Length: 251
Image (cartoon, rainbow, N blue to C red):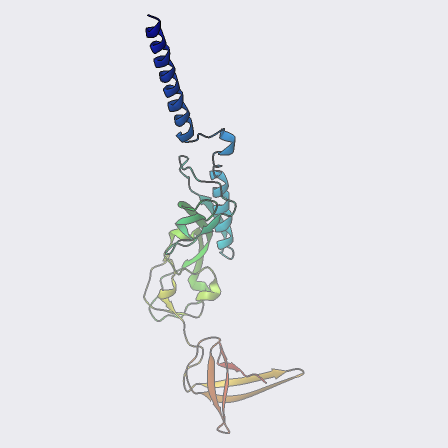
């Protein structure tokens, strides 16, 4: 009986030692766990409202110099987007987009995490534009009496409208049109202010003097273009063509 008890004690001790060995091995080879959430904080999320402000500022810069009153509105950004906070946001116009009417704007971040999104935006340009004040016939030269201003959103009109009378006066009507027709550049062609063979007046001015002479234009020219003129002596001079057959010659 005593011997049996000894065998039992030995057997129990062996089992305990075996279990202890397994427990120590499990601890040694177990994958380490994070000690606390403070050592691996969640990445900060980008403020989407701030992105809309940057888009608006970008488009306002792009539209500097537009006529009339320009208004810019950035579209909604999906609130479910989980974008990493970016310290250097880059706003750009994708290929094929422009700051005009309904458009698309890109927003890019390179670090700490790279991401790119595209946001819809609207640019409206409220300004005056020219329409025909009366029916215009093909070949007719446009005068101020032929023009009338109207107001509207230029982004809703065809491309190439006129916003200044000086842009249209003196041009020749390409196609006949009714009163109220919105005037576009392809409808009015620029009329040469000097025709080939025309007798023109050369004017050269300097400090305290002005000299003029007549000559014959060697070609036709529009306002502000360079044209060659042959004077009485046979000499060829060049000058800038102006309305009324006047050629400005530098001294």
